[in-house]
Image (tube, helix red, strand yellow):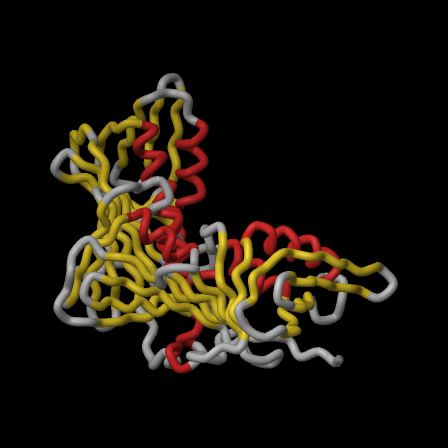
Length: 369
């Protein structure tokens, strides 16, 4: 193999591929990135057997070939080069010679014959979504997935497709996050899959600087995200997701309109003391025109804050885990929002004033009067 390419383009491709490299493995091939040249292009591939990434860049190829190079080594080496063009050549002993300006390196590569193949793209079902929309959907739900794997499907995010809508749902037994948005194309048949949260976290990093259309294809066990010259694939979780629609209350006794910024600022201040307490909780006393927010920690102090509200229902006292409340509030962009409640032991439901683009549900913490 012998080729040259832009150092910046190679570095960008390496940064993308490194997101799928395995950090804990007994297989040295999975610690590496596959380099493959063909048709005046350089293909880079990485996988940890859960997710996989392929990306291609333009290259001036003199000799086609392929080799696996340790990800951490090649990434740091290319990053520290000062030239604009990189020349890479391999020999029959899998030695990789790298030249850039006055810098010359020779490192050891690995045979590529047994490197895992990229899964065949099977588009049993496909749709297109705007990258910025997908970023918002992921950001607005992924924090609510379960960390403990006693219910495996809850470690993933459910993706529902229906007509021209896409819904993402995450829940961990204490809270629920629901976001919905429009697709770029309408579909006739509804479908749904469960994507591991780790995979969604990595795809969010891959598309962080990307704007434009993303084509999503999936089969029974695998999902693919395609954009420009990048392909990202992940296995899917099997099992039945909890019927989240049955969890969201249809009735309410308290209907509160509140300014999100005021509530999040007060909650963050109260959380400073709440974290020192045993339950990390903040108490909220909703009256007709004001919310009294309190928290305390023994031997440290207490917080007392008042926020103006409009309560069209009954007064209610309720307590929430401060972390859960703050994370939900940070996922919302609207200036004002609605909080619906039924009783002090029933869930609090955060909704937009108009529309249905999000629902956040938080179970309360029982506290003694």
